[in-house]
Image 1 (spheres, rainbow over the protein chains, first blue to last red):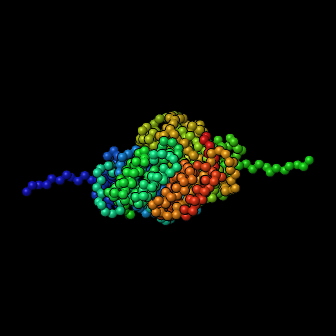
Image 2 (image 1 turned 45 degrees about the horizontal axis):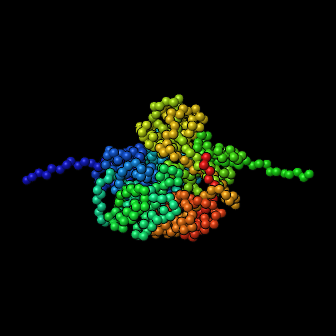
Image 3 (image 1 turned 90 degrees about the vertical axis):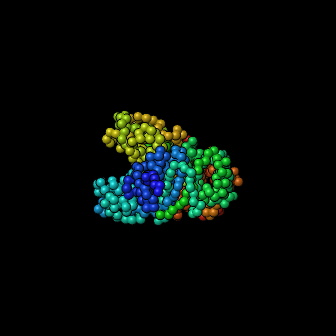
Length: 287
Length: 287
């Protein structure tokens, strides 16, 4: 009988914003429940994306939007300007922030977290700790670590998992200003011929620079979608980096590139644009 | 002869993001060249805006947009959701970032600045100091102070004025990724009957939540502007904070509310909105 020679399994390496205890790690762990993969932490969102682009890792998970704080600008900017990657999936994670101290003390002089959780708990902090100094660090996990290693009077905003990892005590939970706090994460890969299973809910993301700054340019562009009954779930402008007042536009389109009306709308928008980048069609999962 | 009794001059108190050496202070100082005013530093953008709202200060200067980094989200969010203030002027300041160390040393382990300058010099840092740790603090002036007080190996990104104040040495100047780096600052006041001199270049800012999420809603709204030849200099979406995927829209309109076509367009947009807030008509100055 002929023997079948198999290639040894090359583990999929997935990068995320570390260290242990970040919401990005939580999302990455959930992803790995379904696939065999090796997780690799990075210190910035930027470095996760660039590591996928150079081939150092196979895939990267990065946050792209939060329901309170809005888009994660660094993710949008690097995808638009600096790399050629595609989004292969989207994951929506409910975010619950906790206030964590060493030993449960409630006298707090300084609150440490990533800038987004600090912003997302702005009203809570103003109400309960109006005099506390705020310190922004690169991740919620780093904040928990600093509190664990630091003097009394420090508190971190982070997840219960971060509390567990660093031995902190939760003194208040669900402190985010808005209880509908969710973050969209995207899984990025290098461009390949993308296999789309023609079922399920797909989204397509594009970014373009409009041709023309006259009134109505954006409107004409939007009409290319609406006249084909193509729904947009998001429109976002970012600086074009050419001059103050010049923008590029990100569109999230409901539907995949395998659907004719989506493909035609994108083609029409491309014709009205100076440049257009297709960031991929991908399925969406709520965690 | 009857004597004329005058009220003693109440000095105008202008709040800004301090401490000394920030770009906000630079803008505030330029403003005070023209008016007698007393400058008052605050530690966050949020607290400047809220101090104007409570009447603690007469006016506040805050950044609202940078040509590379985009909108300053905290400014937009507080104006939309938390206070009732108007914009009375806009100032555009060219931003030039310098890399500053104590005594001019060039071995740098850690670069400290406000998150926006760190982002604006992302490519420079990746090219020249790929291994440096980045630390985000609340202002460029604070970063300069930390470097002045800290161990060797620290560098700050800030202005030449910050270097001067804290006795640092500039080791590289104009390190921003894009040489068209400008920041728009706005001067905020409490709502009063606003006197508009009917001359010069005015802008009007509004924020609204559209009535209807169907395709074409935004387009119909944009048509209210374009069919009246009202030009938009900016469109920006921010989370509505109600649910992921719901947004409010900020529009910067060319022209003042004293112009009939602007007034009519805003009225028409108001009728298509769940709510609309007029943030004021104001002149623009390039510093």
